[in-house]
Each structure stands twice: as structure tokens, then as C-alpha cells.
Length: 452
Image 1 (cartoon, one colour):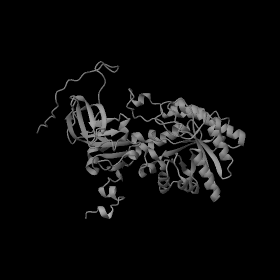
Image 2 (cartoon, rainbow, N blue to C red):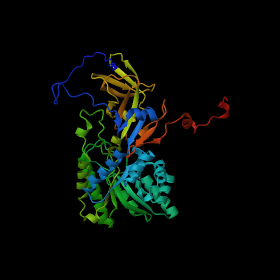
Image 3 (cartoon, one colour):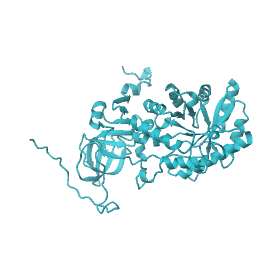
Image 4 (cartoon, rainbow, N blue to C red):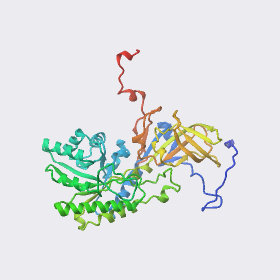
């Protein structure tokens, strides 16, 4: 029987740090991730190329169903609205909509996308500070729930509804002090200085505007469940005041999104799963605040949640291939891969889990991972313990489901294929790799500049 030649590993000296787990320190890396949802990484690359984005339909559905279960156990009326800006790939949005999620959009483009996917206007929430009159007119005609961000937008709505004698269902976005700093007070009307109450009075003085909800979004990657209790309590107090003075009970209270996922921030020492509150803690806090309303269960407003990253981050993967190895001037090992920050924008603030996709050597070394771009900022990870990786071997970058496919760009390299592993184990292409023709189809060359 032929013997398989063992791979050569360069001798290195590794310093061990004692820790709580054992006197030799904890294991540096996880076991190789040779498959995603049972599909071999090598098969995926052979079929669809590298780099390659991969999504799990099963994981998305489980995340959404679990979130509904947790919140409905704590509050009687719950409705999720998928945050399009987090990931607006059609296939991803469609899975969430099949799981009874509405659409939450922040631009006319996203509004058009939701309508094209068949979402009813009444099941769309329109947020954002820059809607424009054309977008507002479209939203009014479709019965979209419009969340007013500032007084100029309120005046536009009054003008549009009066000129066309249309009715608009509106809510206001409220910013407030919840103990998280810096405050997100650039969006919406302030609670503490009375601006939100002033906006409510102006809305109720217009015969064509129907106040149906109150909305807040206190920030992003929030790690304090208590902040949500404070926010829910303040919106409940505002809803109670509206009921007392105008005898109007809002249909819903929208607590926005911002729940942290289990992606670890670069500034965090401990892994995210050890410090980030679970959905149960967020749900307990929000329900506690809303139950300050002195009403029967059937009279309570609906709770709307615009959760994004916490429902998609762990359902996304990026497969990449090693292009080269090199030594930096200070002797550190560096690996160059074929996926750069143009595809993984979140590497600027996350320590993504990065794992070899094949059996590798036993010895690990502090490694810097660079992308393929001709820019010094193209660094996927400044420091991570990895075994020696040969040219052509693969790595899997996890927790890439949120924001990477909305903030990616064709910079130096075009954007690659995106696939979804379906519940039945099949693999579907959900976004084709870009071509030069796709990139330039919107460009025009003046006759004077044409050479042929």
C-alpha cells in the first residue's frame, strides 16, 4: 500500500499562556470546517468558484421562528419586520417573508424592492431620514406605514395628503436617553425635551394623517437589555399620554432593532456569546416596559421588532482560498486570500470566526490575513492563531450574514457568486457573479473619446 507523504511543517516555538481551562492554555483553533450544512466546502468551490458567499435557509428559518417563540411567550402581540438594509438579497428577504415577517425599509429603492417581492403596502414600515416627496407619495398610495423622522418630513406629508386628499398612516420615531452613549439623537424627535409630544400634536391636528404607532431605534449592536426596558417604558408613557389627552390608542409600538449578534467586536476581550445578552433577556426587558400600560391584554398595542443582524449573522459564510504565504518585516506570518474588505466590510469591526476548511498541521502561529486588493487597508484580520496553510487551501469565515452583502462593492475585484443551501440539501445560486459587462452597462462614452 502506498504511503501518503506527510505535509511539512516549519519548526516554530510557541509560547503557552496558562489560563482557567488548563495549565497549557486553551486550544487555539476549532476543528476544520470541511462542510457547511452537510455540503463539502470543496464541492461548493468546484461548482461556484472562490470566493463564495453561502447562506443557510434552515438557519434563517430557525432564527426567525425562535425569535417569535421567545417574544410571544412574553408579550401577547408580536410582529417582526425584516430589516432590508441588513441584507436585501431577494432570496434572503423571501425566506423571512415566508416566516411571517413584514418589511422594514429605509429608502425608495428598498420600498420598491419590497413591493416587487409581493409584500403588501400595509405590511411595510418606511423608516429613514431621507424619503423624498416621490417616495412618500408612493408610500401613501400603497398604504405603507410611514415613520416620520423630522418636522420637514411631517410638513411634506401634510402637503401631499391635502393636495391629493389622501390619508396616510404614520408613526413618529422617538429618540431618548436610555443610558447608551453616544445617543442616537440624529434620528427622530426627542422624548425628554418635549419635541416628540409636539410632533404628536401636529399630526393629530391634520385631518389626513392617522397616528397609528410610536417607534424608536436606540442604536446598533446594543449589549444592554436594560436600555430596551427604559425605551419601552418611555414609549408606553407617551402612548398613555396620547390616550389620556386625545382618547387615541396607538396600534403598535415599534422597538426597532439593534440586538447584538454573536459576532465578537474587535474591542471585546471575551467572545460575544459570553457577554452579549440573549434574545430572552431583550424580550423580558421590552415586555416589562410595555406592561406598564394599564390595559387588558386585548387592548395592548402590537409590539413590532425590526431585528436584523441577530437573525441573519450566523446564517452566512464566506469561503475563500489562500493565494500566497509570506513573512512580514518583523517576522510575522501573513496569508493572502482571494476575499478582501470589498466583500467583508464588517472585518473593520468584527473578529469573525475564521477556520481552515481542511485538515491542517497541529502547530499554530500568529497570522495576519490580507485580502487581494492593492490597498494597505485590505486586512481581514490583524492577528489570529492558524496552522500553516498552503496555497490553494480554503478557509471559512463565519457570521457574515449581516451587512456584508449590502455594503460590499466592486473595488478592484468584482463581486462573486452567492448561493443558498436549501432545507432539502440542494444548493441554489441566488446571485450571479458579476461580469465586466454588468459593471459597465450603465456607463456611456462620449463619441469624442471612442477609439473604435
